[in-house]
Length: 141
Image (cartoon, rainbow, N blue to C red; front, side, top):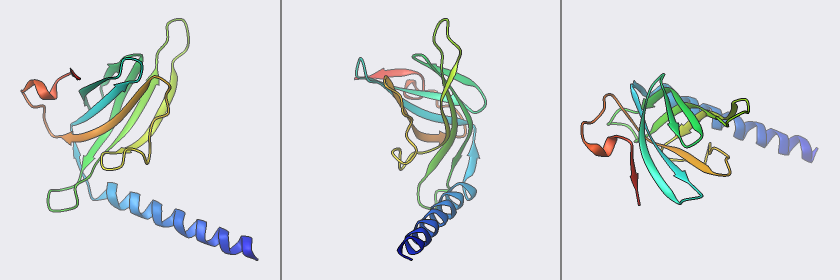
């Protein structure tokens, strides 16, 4: 009996999470560029880079493609989300998919990429590239 109640609460919580995430993504507007940030855990360097939707970008041994990047309108609670495919390329070995799914800028820990050397997370979605050097591939720190 107690397992039934616990299962009911788990099912309810899971359904509410799915509804929340679907609502977040469905109300968003598609954008053409995903602004990402990556951390190389070995060197402790962070890099901010822009990934055009549908095109590959390289970060270390990772090959990243943003399939879509969506952002809520300004009148709603701020949120940017990107659906990313991240693969690791090693010489002499087959390409391995290390992450495939949605990442949310406001909650990077919800759907974090598990990798021993790199962390990647979404910062923002943009309609077009900024011409300043802050939006291009640059390394900080």
